[in-house]
Length: 570
Image 1 (tube, helix red, strand yellow):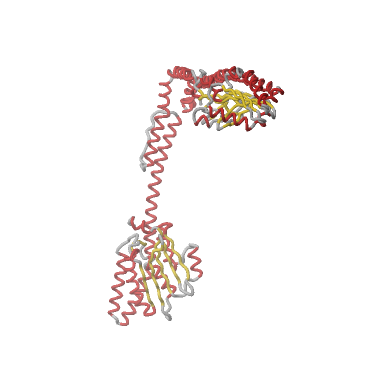
Image 2 (tube, rainbow, N blue to C red):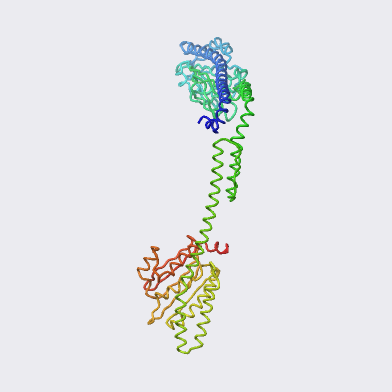
């Protein structure tokens, strides 16, 4: 038992491969996972520290500016003078504001402008740092403050983001219904210190709202499509397949956040070197065992499987003489190849026997069915000749024997599997010539055949069987009997139809035919015809019998795909 296990394919391949590869693979996976997490965490920590420094400086300035606004909003006497309609009081208040604030704005590096205005008398004083804004933008902000004075006084020194003239502006205001004091800045100015940062990984910075609305352009359309409203307690990933590492710092006093986006590939840093080190370790571990592993795999797996595949391919192409060589290999492969060779031999022998049996069976059945349809007609013909000879009508005897000779030549001269409609009609003509002499003037036969169907191939004696069957049930010595033959094309099918004006088929006969019961001795002709049609056309041929209204019987043969049969030479 122990020997059989050691010789098995599982032992010879899985145990060596796992024994050599598993420790190295586990080590490489651990190194890779740890390196990725460590690099991303380090990048996040570095960038977060830098952003915190900038945000701390920004919050310091914004807090200082808010204090100035709140202090100005409580100077009631000055506000009254500033909003006065008396030109002297208004002038003195303006000079006083200028004296106190002319140098105030220049002390702020991240605030763009300062505005004081009175909605009562329209008095306005404004100062601007010469940073990034142009005259048009300053005028837009001034008009916004003037038109929203009542709303801005409710801020009480708080900072809020407003969209003015298509650009996001950070603005703080304080005051009352007589005067409004305001500081404002642009996010582009807040971004200027960030642009010069040298951070780990090539990334992009931008300002955004807490709801993810972008206040500055991150640079590319792909970056604009990212989500900036994530949880900033740690970093998160976004983009196709988590392509980007995103982090940021919230600024509660202004309801905005500074965001950093770094492509993860850039964030790997020294990871490629660590990965290369892991690969080198793996190569060193496996180097000594590679030739041995390849030898085992080739001998016990690759070579036997390759031979087995070649053998299967030959069998698929029809070569049942294929045998696969079986040099020394694993126990499983030896058994598999031996079983394959035995199976192919069995299939070949079975196929030959089945094919020979099928040919013999079909030949016997066709011969038997053809012979079944012949004797009774000869007896009837000889009886007609006998009666005619007694009457001394030598000319009629000559005609009968001539037609009978042609009829017998058709029957005996060839054992074809199929004939054309033209050949069958010529034969039926001889048959009907004899029957007209036998039946007299009370019998009439009409035919109509489409030219395109004259080369349709059918089993021999098909039409004769149909006509003979109609005569059997329709002929009446006291009334005229008519048999009509129509051969026509309907859609993709060819239809052969024989109808008469007799009393129709008996109900018992119809039931026996439709249930495919074993035919009675005197009803074997039409049943045999159905069998021969099935051998020739399979499911594509169908024969139907039914009674006509008000009287008469009809037999139809429908053959679908008959053109394909004709082209194949059947």
